[in-house]
Length: 310
Image 1 (tube, rainbow, N blue to C red):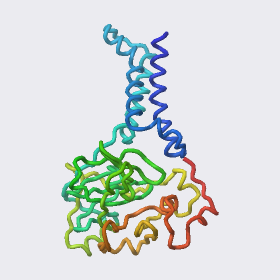
Image 2: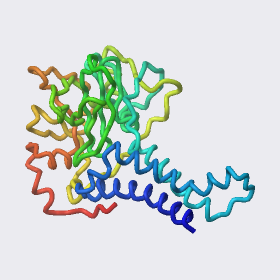
Image 3: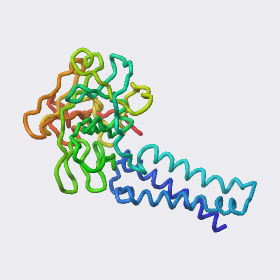
Image 4: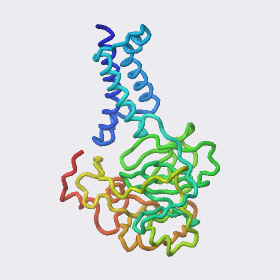
């Protein structure tokens, strides 16, 4: 009977970590942040899976052929929730994937992130990987906040990973420090990451306007390019009209909306000084971060809330 309760306690521990992560990201319960720090949540999930498998492991050692269903359920539940957390990169941060040139016939409507040298990466691949290395450039993209920023990271000793979400994007870091993935600001001291120019445009514009037409993707066979957009369900996006509208943040002060006409031009940005390169962000995330919205929207957008429940 004791082992029975140990198993179910183990599964409950794993489920608790996943639910706490949902409440932190979707429910805005930041009080839970200490419980989902990377090291603590890994320990809790590991202990939970081990406890949920206690009786199963014991009976396996005793060469029991027919295992009772009661011993399998908590183990199966713990493994499923742990696998879900791993797949979502909640449990183990995944270091930036290194993309390489690939050959792919892309649809003219495909949305691309174009670097300063003209090379490009489909945005849907960035959404899946979150942090991507193209040579000495790190591209960071949050699909919910629609943050898209390029950084120079050639001198960093370790590749960065998406570590923990925040109200309008996520943190990136390595073993030494942490940065805000949206604008590259250092959070544990040290230097900010240097932003590099990056341009968002359709593939048709990239093919016609850019001399260097090298497409980068993950090693091996290129995956299918997704066209489905995510609906932001985080607290900051609820009740915001046109919440997911793309826009560019200039000088870390002003957010300008991006229209379809803008996406049909692939004009590289020329920064005016050190670390003045702009970056992209959804309207709702720009409002949350306090940027000036140049079209007169902003707090007034919340006067007509729309239904958006998780």
